Length: 420
Image 1 (cartoon, rainbow, N blue to C red):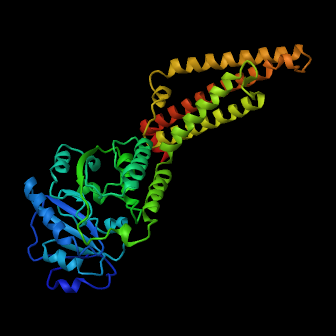
Image 2: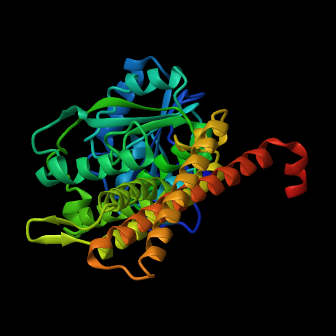
Image 3: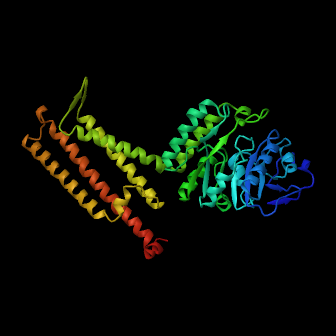
């Protein structure tokens, strides 16, 4: 990366460079402990106030800090930022994820704090983030919903529907203690920041970052923050662009969740399918059941069998994936842990019971001359239940053996060496 010593701020404005270029202010801070690293796109209305807020935040927290603006503007934003004492990294690509990707290796502080330059996040108070980082947390998220939100700072649809819904889904799917996944104000050690892939070029970087933190099993925490309404004269990027931008961001969050963490979502789906299908099989074990005008018969039970076994298959896929990634789901500790022998005996007993029931059904069918009249409809229903029981026990047994083999391959140095 080329580094330019500051001489004339006007030289920064113009066409974007072919590669990232770092511009230094006259009074460049030395040996900063903290780096505030934020992208900017035509933010001349707020850039000076934002940098002043950062300086207040450094003073209040008692740290020596620097502000680095990742800029792709075509207005006076970089010029004003340099004059206010910030470093300016001019980058060739636009997009939040792309900006943060281009800024890897630029921060000099031990910790990096990300955010926006629109003065909606209050960078005058950085102490909560720094306290968590000093305590050893690796990924610290801001949470606007547990903090304060100024009236009019967030569209009502976003505040009460879009953000809580997608945040809840994301947190539930990934099992992370994060209640505001869209919050752009977050902090982490610089080493961790520089190791992030940033494969997403747009707003989806925020979700991708959480996925990576979860995958790496780092300590994740939250800090309540204040969210202010943007200063007068500053138009948000939602107002500058299409009204569909917010919807695209929400869809992008879901896409990242499905593509980068599919096992977390499929696990919940697999459990629902297995339980609902199993209930349908068991409830129809004795024969058809009528509920009002509806009659649930053998066809419904057969469909329930297929649904339940499909859910169990999905669960097996998730279990194997998570074991390869060394992220064990709760039931798997039984399959590969010290309780395996007892669990295996239970599976053998269940499968034996199922086979006994199959024998009873075959015997009754043989005695009926291999025909089933209406009064003997229970034979088919009980047979489906028996096959479901045997199938589930056999599948869990094979899954347990496969998982135990994976654990052994990972723990045994000789087998691991041969596998390479």
